Amino acid sequence: MRRIFLVGYMGVGKTVKGRRLATQFGMDFVDLDEYISIQTGKSISQIFAEQGENGFRMVERQMLHHLCRERQDVVVSCGGGTPCFFDNMDYMNSCGETIYLQADVSYILQSLDSDDKERPLLHGLTGRELEDFVCRQLKERDAFYRKAKKTIDAVTFLSSESS
Image 1: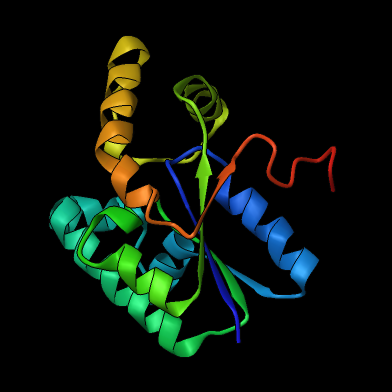
Image 2: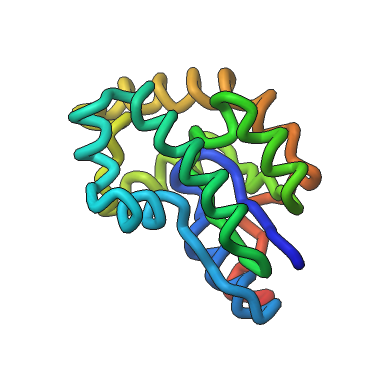
C-alpha cells in the first residue's frame, strides 16, 4: 500500500506532474479538487460561493480523510491550501509520502498567467495585486509545506526533458 501526496502552491504543476508520477509507478492518480467536485456534485467555485473558504476547507478535510480510507496505491495532487488547514499535513504524513513541489514567485505567476483554471482565491486579482497576494500566501503557507517529507524543485521534477 502506498500513497504519495503532492503539495505546494497553486500553479506549480502538482496535477500534471502527479499524473506523470502515477504513470511511472503504475499507481492511480487523484486530483483532490476534482475528487471533491465529483463527491459533492459541485465545483470548487460553487462550494466557495455557498459556504465560503472555511466551509470549503471543512469539506476538503472530510474528502481527504474519505480518500485515504478508500484508496491506496495512489498519487494525490492536493490543492494549494490543503496542507495549511486543520491537521491535514500531519494526517497526510501519517498516511503516506508527502512531496513539496517548491517554486519561486516568478514561476508561479507565469504558470497562473497561462493557466485557464478558475481559482476562487485569485478572482479579480491582476498584476501587482496578484503578485502581492501570491508572495503573502507563500510566506504564510511555507511552514506547512515544509512539513512534507521531501522538498523538490517544481521546475525540474519530472520535467519533460527527464522523462
